[in-house]
Image (cartoon, rainbow, N blue to C red; front, side, top):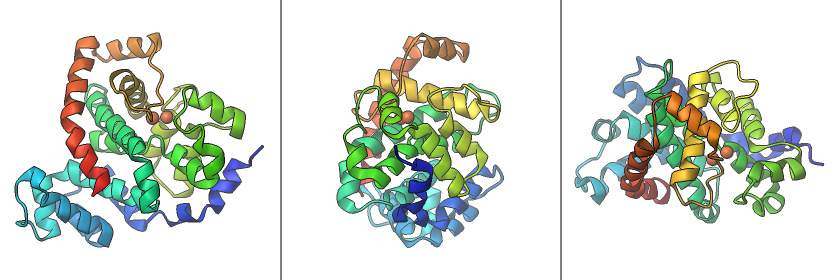
Length: 273
Ligand SMILES: [Fe+2]
Ligand SMILES: [Fe+2]
């Protein structure tokens, strides 16, 4: 059996989670943070800064070539979009170009869960949409960590049905727990760590319940409404009960599905730039 907790610490690419990512999370988690604060953090990471300006100038927004500073780009794209681009860029940069491309479905899944978590969080008390989106974006980070650490051993099961069972069989641990270890090592705030650790089961959850429920429901709902091989949620009666407890029904899910379809272009741009 593998000693996963020890092995992930030795994976070199993972030890370089950029400082900018941590600073971004602090800024995003702070309700009082302003556009200036966000621009200030982004300016310090060349890759992120370039991507944000490129995104603002993409034909999708119809302002090609007109945006030439971070401040302008941030104002134009809006807080939510900018923070997602920034976070995804820093995570994508852990991978080589070819690897990142192989994981397109995975990124699309991460984005879908983030998007839906944000929608659910609006119906749940004591949740912060920004933090929730971010926790959603990182919810399956454990899968990436396992992939980077054990490539050949993990590749074969990464997109399989009953993923958690297979992970437990092979590695003695699931990606939820690995995600927790990784984020802990990288000094992420609890608001992100808890929803990531409990995104498949709330058993034993003591803190940040609203956030965890939002991400858990998003993971399950995305499995039902999206055909994506990377979707690893399980949609069952419990999911349905929880969903109706926060006021969602089949009809609402249909609307979320439509919203996600509209986002498809955005998603592609996120991970292909
Ligand atoms: Fe998952
Ligand atoms: Fe997932």
